Image (tube, rainbow, N blue to C red; front, side, top):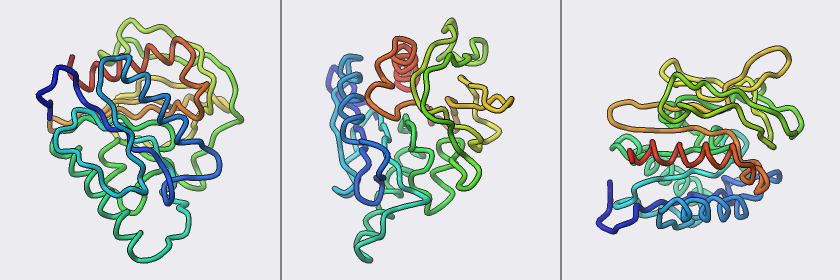
Length: 229
């Protein structure tokens, strides 16, 4: 997938329309993600989900920062439904061809129309089961001995929503957890299958969530692993 320029390219797929919701400012968090990725040496384009399928032909990293999914806004008609289906197929096909994917925050609840997106990212938000306590500041636990992303990374302070009771697939390697109601819940995991590298990172409710040092270091490590650099 690597393009011919000196800097790898990334597309941030930003939720809008069907894949937006009243609780998240995807435009703001996508802009923040784009800036951070630029600082990590990537050429970044932001593409709204309302703009139809992006061109992923020469894209080195796809970042999905969108929501909706199981609770989409009402379709304006069959044309929008077809556009959503084309977008989902494009994203899933990109991953299955070996394109690396970073899915953040509500991306566990995007492309809920079929099982293939959950299969790609190694888990999902389960309506009626998954939840999060009110956003707060807490120290999350890092598994330092299971994956290159978190090797040597200490537990860190996060200021965010802490997703709980997510469904994860057996081949997802859990990297970061938090405790809620006496249960330890996975909030970041990695998955590698048939040459495809994927990270799901539940952090990123708002712009402030990206500002703390531990979260920024985690993002850098995720990008480095996804790009095999």
